[in-house]
Every structure is written in structure tokens, then in C-alpha cells.
Image 1 (cartoon, rainbow, N blue to C red):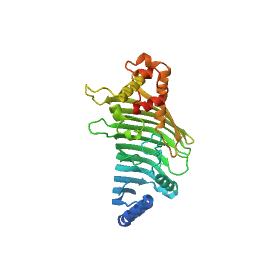
Image 2: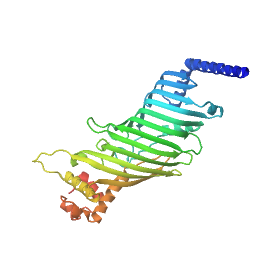
Image 3: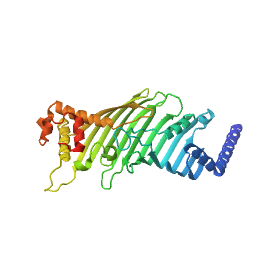
Image 4: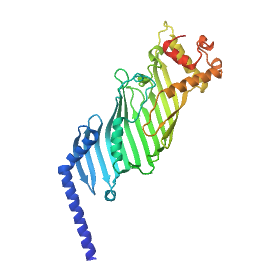
Length: 378
């Protein structure tokens, strides 16, 4: 028994010495090492307020600032000692409290860029792919990642003018069992956030729930986005619909998408609903212009087809690794739904006020009708 006590006592002394040495080293050199590593990874100036150890060997970081990329108020990293001994970097727990991230899209403008609906919204930039490749060269395992009260600023400067900025706040993100090297494992994740629009408007809400296998490139997830301010997204469809001439002042969108990927072939079945459409007030002596008449008529078509609701169903096919999205998917669904309404004779039966020349067949296709929303050709 005395020998066992001596062994335990010696073990405690050794642990205290190791912890004290590590703490002293981190206190003297750790902050500089962390800054150096982050600057090498991001190619940006890094500022760090504090870095220290807590028992048993957990790392705490405060006031981390990488200008133009991220700010983190508090970070907690709990590594696995056994993982390090096996040659892997294993993080049992990684917590980021009140982080702020910036994602800026600045691809060179082309003939099909700016507000063209053919512009692909590529979610992985060349810079992010380089960083990902560097991470994949490490045998990194994250057992649990938690982001609390986060914020993301998305800035798209590929559009005409000043571009567009969207903010997602109150982000809460949980992820378990992520392997950043070739290894078949199921990673579960959940994401919740809010999108503040103009003052006085209801905030948008985002919820994502699913799993993925990076090695097999398989994935299944459900995305729900409610109360999207359609006017704030106008730069993306400005060449498709003229809101000023149609006198549309307010519109909300709700989106539900069921995503499935098998061997990197990703399919997203999307259901988009347009709600709360408000037209700008018009003086009594002023006639309703043609563009507004057309807009009202088109909305009535969709309401007739869907029991008073304005909905679009469309499918996106892309790749799980380096996905891309084009607003053409929504445009095609819009025109197909209009064509269906005319084909099934829903227009004549259900629309009370409708431009007579459209009923008479002047517009021969849904594409012509979508152009009419801009040109006011009726």
C-alpha cells in the first residue's frame, strides 16, 4: 500500500511539473506561437489578447482578431492526450463563444456576373479550398464543436453598384465527429440563426439539421429559411423583375430544402413560398400602370394554382464538394408554373381581373410573360 501511495504521489508530482512547465511555456511563448501559426494559415495580421491553460491541459483563448476574416471573444480547446500519442490531433471539445465571421465574395466580374440570374453562388472560394487542403494534410479530428451567439457577415461584391451585405446573427452551431482526413465517419450537425432585415421588420430564421460523410461524400440535411426579405435580395434578380415599375414594396419568402448527396452528387428538392406581398400606395387619380397590372395578374395565377398560395418547387443538382447554385432554377420553375396554369385553363376560370390580351393568347410563352413584367408590353 505504501508503494502504491508513493507511485501515486510521484505521478501527481510529475503531472504538476508537466502542467507548470506547459503553463509557463504557453505564458512566455505560446501566444506568439499561436499568432505565428494563424498568420501562416490565413496570410493576415492576427491579434490575440490572451492564451492560457486550464486543468488538465485545456487551452483558453480570449480576444482573437483576424481582420476581415474572424473575431472570437472566447475560445476553449480540449485536446486528447491519447490522440496526440497516436499521431492525430484530436479535439474532444472546441467551443467558440461570440465569434464573428466575414465571408466576402469578390470574383472578377464577367459578362454573366453582376445581377444576372445566371451568376453561380459558389460556396467554396479558391482561398477556402487552399485552407481546407492545408487542414486535410493534418490528421485532425474534432469530436465536438460548439459555436454560441455567433455572427456571419456575407458580402457579395460581384453585383453591380455597392453589392449586397447580409448578416446572420445569434448563430448556434453544433457538430460532432468530424474527421479532416480520409476516414469514413458520420458527422452530425445542427445550425440555427437569425437574419435582421430593415428596422421594424420581422427577422428571418434559418434552421439546418443533418449529417454528412466527407470521405464518402454522402450527405442528408433539411434546410428551413423563414421570413426572407425579398426586397433585400433584389440585386440578384434586378434584370428579371423591375420592382419599381411593378410598384412592389414588400415581399417575404419561405424556403424548405431537402438535401441528399450520394458519392458527391448532390440533389436539393426545394419548396419556395412567396408571402406578404404589398404594393406601394397609389393616388386615386393615378391609373395602375401596365407593369403592376401584369404583376397582379401573375400573382393571381399562382394563387389559383395553389389554393391561394404562391409556391415554386424546383430541384438543384450540383456537387457536395464545391457546390454551386444559380437563380435560373427558380426562374425556370416560375415559367413552368405559369405555362402549366395556361395549359390547364386555370386562368380563365379563376382570375377575375386579368389583361385581356394575355387571355387572348398574345403572350405565347411564360418567358414572354416574364419579360413583360419588366417591359410592360401589354
